[in-house]
Length: 184
Length: 154
Image (cartoon, rainbow over all chains, first blue to last red; front, top):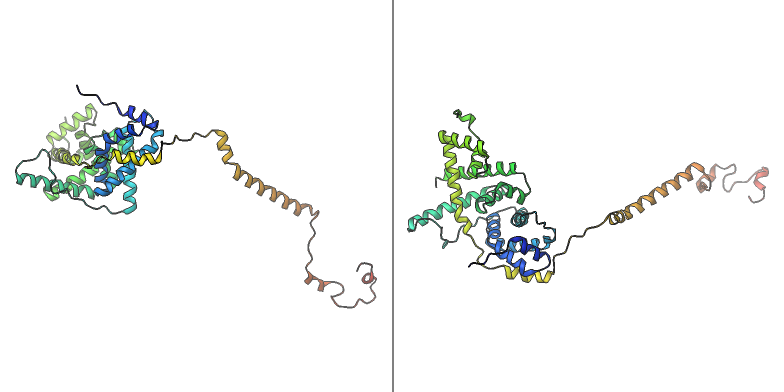
């Protein structure tokens, strides 16, 4: 029988007592999500790895301030968002990072032509995403990739649900417009 | 439901919320009905749905390394997370001490100088040497017959 993983709150409570292994469990649980969010925000793999570590260390330092009423995931993403935004503010320019050549696009056609088309479509999406303003891009990523609800995004970014709704719609409109122009 | 003209079409905001399942019952039914009959909104709704699908591959990105052990090592050097300090009111009062002392000093100096000006006691105006030329007998001059010139102490 598969062992049920303890909820975040259990690991967080232990981490608050200084248990680094418990915090390590939280890192393992969230490192992929935090990485892909930061990667799409800053557009550089190396920088994303560095910023991800920075975000987790900031989370460790801020742990005593965490309250059980807050969802750990949204709390962690608020730290990741601030870390990525600070980095973008420092350098002002986002470097466009294309997908790796050997990247497999899941759920797409097995034939080479279909794979190629899927990759092109994905690159077009990445390019469109990188053209969005930072405040729109972060909302799209939290919604489309992290599958957060409006209330979770609102908690993670410290903005109202109404702002989430309108900003997300503007971002999607821009992405759809770009897609239509490219006719991908 | 009444058909809307294009200018009455719901904003993308509503269609976007519909795709996300973030609209409440009545609004959801109304927007969905409209999109079913309006070519513009129907097309936008399809595009928004396709966009959601297009994002799925991006969720597959992985760092490719397990950073947990690396982070644990970095944390070992930092020690236990510090509990936020909770200062009481007495501490907040003590924090005001330096500025309070400065304010008291300025006030005391102001009162002292004011008292000197108004009372005049103890305040002896200095007489510049240059003013001596306006004396009854200019410096170096001879005093002719004025008894006060020869008064003791002169």
